[in-house]
Length: 168
Length: 168
Image 1 (cartoon, chains in turn purple, orange):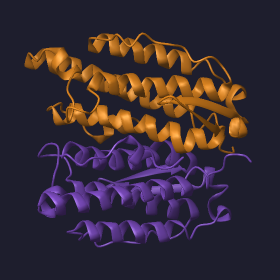
Image 2 (tube, rainbow over the protein chains, first blue to last red):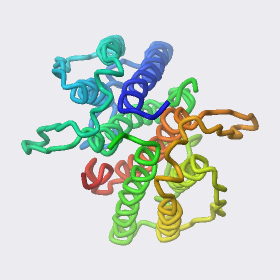
Image 3 (cartoon, one colour):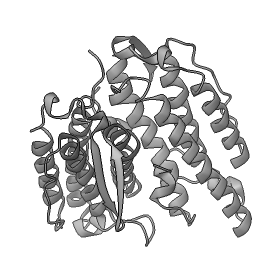
């Protein structure tokens, strides 16, 4: 079967969000076992002017819901961005997974040339669907997912790249 | 135009390798300006059992050359993995860019169901072309590219996410 816009988006987000959820589950257990306050890990960042762990997960999920909704021409759901625990972040991932999975191939396939307009730092940016997915949404999604992984890994959580890549 | 295996691979690798090269150029200037031995940044890692910066770039370029070659049914070029300077890593990126750009759409399009066999930690893994690209090669490529970025960012290099995403 030919590669399609649906195949390159929904199953990717679903797989990676499931992997992130499993990593967060390990982080939750790790914090409990080592008696680390969850807030310490949730607010961990590599340098003061980078986003903390919680924000990395918020943005990764934002890219998953925003990308699939925009490619389908649907409304992007708004989240409160108020998570203060691993459990709440895992609920956010679960909510995102449910949303992303509402889309069927027919909703997203053929969106290569769909006009997509974003507001970024106050400026309007216009894309066609295909470069939006390949050159903007996926690199951003992976950027925040990887940074979240790296923050936990650097904090001593016993995870490896297979946790990030997931079952293949 | 419909999304294709070529579109989802070659232009992605080309864009991201160019972005990495620009980041490495900034890192080279930063090391000189701050009088940091290049080897310190090249050997930087988040935790003792994670790969150092140099290895992250080596693996990212390995995924770019390996993925495009395998999808096209071509031989994967072997590199010596002996880089000990930013200049040498930038040469590796340039060499990878030249290689990746030898492939034309006709070489890679239609590779969705191509059988691909990899040896991973001594075990043979078999993929079809499409899941190999979407579920294995791209997540791995972005994982190492992002970790390289994060290492430099955490070391004080003045870069932002736009350096990672590049011109869009």
